[in-house]
Length: 88
Image (cartoon, rainbow, N blue to C red; front, side, top):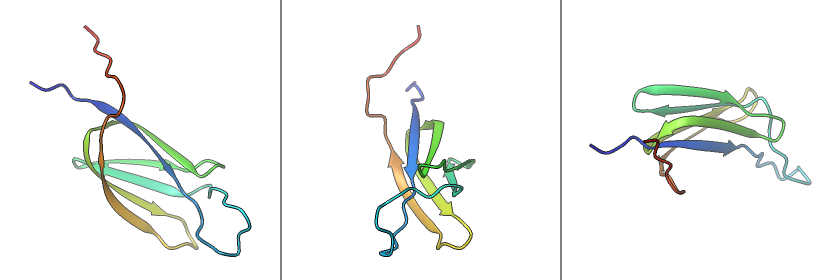
């Protein structure tokens, strides 16, 4: 059997407003990842970063929302890009 590969994901949320003179991440944004029927939720920090751990390789749906802003939804494929560590 193939082992389950755990992966992490970081989502950075930036405003698209042309009024902003520099790009700063948006804090307090709700980011939800749905994968294989399991829902993970995190809130962005002051840098606009939401971090997820213990996801698995494969398709994931990402939902981003904050009151007063348009929401954003996308689907992506998560893949491991490093050297696996096997506990034996």
